[in-house]
Image 1 (cartoon, rainbow, N blue to C red):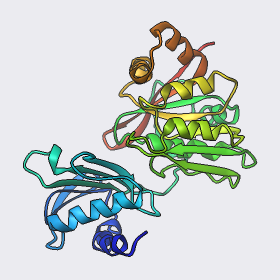
Image 2 (image 1 turned 180 degrees about the vertical axis):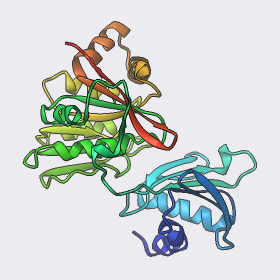
Image 3 (image 1 turned 30 degrees about the vertical axis):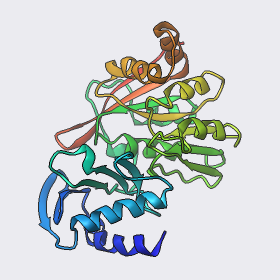
Image 4 (image 1 turned 90 degrees about the vertical axis):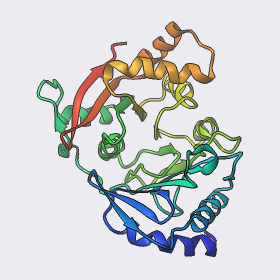
Length: 297
């Protein structure tokens, strides 16, 4: 990290250490702070447009990417942290000079018992743990802020400590206690830099016993399904889907975005490559495991 970026980050430090969940800056000097769903406004004279623009450019430089009119989005993390950053350039905003969001994750790895179970769920906590021990391919579904990654980290506690793990993600949010592991960071902006396809291809040369993929999107869905269909077991990923019934549609849309493949073939891939889908939602402030679907082979 450059000295310039390090100095710029010092201005954000009070917010990052305040126990907030997220900070959002939509206009200079105005900082909106999210604490458990309650947003408040603070004024900080140091956060003028010049400062914020310099911060965005320096952060982009530290990742080897550009941030300007031709490259108006930056999706990354703060150096040496798992704080996810999303920045938008003024060229794609209406009456704004910049938009900066910094999400501050809770680094506590919760036990799976901290998640509530829906009353009609036919699987219990021990069943979910056993899925992992039995090396089932698992997909965790949920909407924004539902706790997908938190549930993923909880399930990873059940992985045998002796197993070799490869993790691929675009922001460092996944934690597993295994020492024999490789964590690959890919570029979220698909601009020719090291991307998810490169990450999966590299991972296969690293002899993983399990592959953990941060989140399925349009770029990585089909390669991940292909991997699951070639004998690799125990793989886990997350998917943005608001209900379990939306899973097939969400995966189909993702996979067909970059690849020409028939719907029937794709759905067969899904049925054969995924053993269980776990649906999680946030209901009245609680993270609830709502549904578990088993795909019969």
